[in-house]
Length: 160
Image (tube, rainbow, N blue to C red; front, top):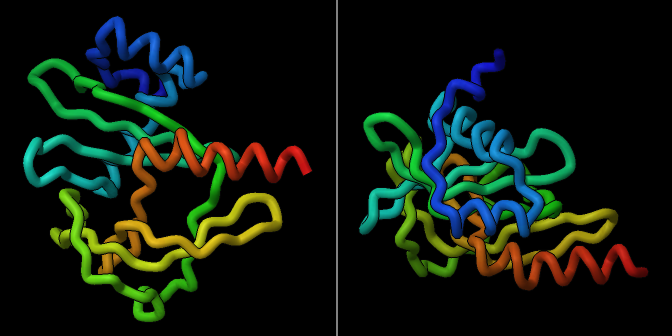
């Protein structure tokens, strides 16, 4: 049995339908949570205390918003995209807007701030302003962006 298989999920019926509609398997969700909890690479919402983490096992990045209960991990939402987050390796080069976010990096204990980062899909690179951790470079692609403009851009590039 793989280590992620021990993770017990609490997902509502609506959540199950959402996962099914987005072609996200329960094991994808378990892998995201296992990776986040093992590495500490996750975001925490300052008001709700929920965690948000991603994992990219191959060509798809999976994001899961969740919280820990006594027996399980309650899953609130999950989404995915195929864009690759690009960084030059140095966050010093990022153009910072100074605007904040309700999320903070759990590893660095740093609030995210909007910065100019790069997304790549296929051979195209897009500069975009996204919340990111200035310390470690953790970049947030939120659900609205992933299922909206990012999905549209991916489809447009595939249609070329």
